Amino acid sequence: MNIIGQIVKHKIWGEGEIITIDQAGENARIAVEFAVGEKQFVYPTCFEKYLIAVDDIFKSQVEQELSVLANKVENERVQREVEREKRAVQIEEAKIKSKWRANPRSNVALKCTFCDGGSNECLMGFCNICSDDNIRKNIQTKDSTWCGTESYCKMYLDGQITREELQAKYDEDNSSVCYESNLFNAWCYEAGMVVKGINKGKPKVFKEVQNNKLCVLTTQKLKNKPEERQIFGVFIISRSIVGDEFSAGRVEAHTKYRLALTPK
Figure (cartoon, rainbow, N blue to C red):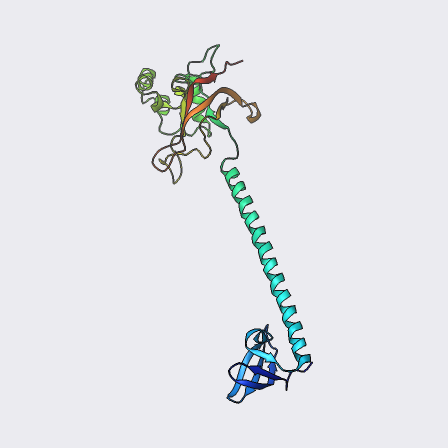
């Protein structure tokens, strides 16, 4: 139906005639000529508050268009609500996944450089300074970065200190030699410091440590393959420090729930 020429009423400006309609864009606009001059309105929503159609057929058409528009608005509102709820579920799932990624496992496994110090039929080692042969092997391998840097063991191998002086350093401060040689004495393990690269000297951190969880100690003898890595001790973590830019990460064993495995 062509609405140009239709008569409408406005509560202030009285009767007027629709003279043009511009349907460009999302909202159509009509121009109405009143006695006071031309006025413009958004069509058909202007008939909800401002204008009244005089012709019954035109009025019916306006009501039908308003109904269609109302249904469209309601459908869009429902769709937005569905999208909002869907997004809320996605955000909640992302939070759950994020929490799971932050703690992807309950227990911790530590890879320790093999130490045969104090080894016997009951212990693989890890309670004194390594033998000369093992010191040499650990320093010569690229994997044992601490052993091959500025350690007391490196000083001993280079002839700067004697074996007796090395032992004296250990007796004075076990952890100053290495954490592995003191592991079954102190029953704690520190992440240590970065020994190479631009972060040299900065503390290392543990990304995943939790109190009251299991810590598995593993090691690999230099002659063995990676799949031959052995578990030589386990304990329940009684205290843990993740570490930061000032201090290294640290885990401490429960005084009761800890076990050093035999070589067998």
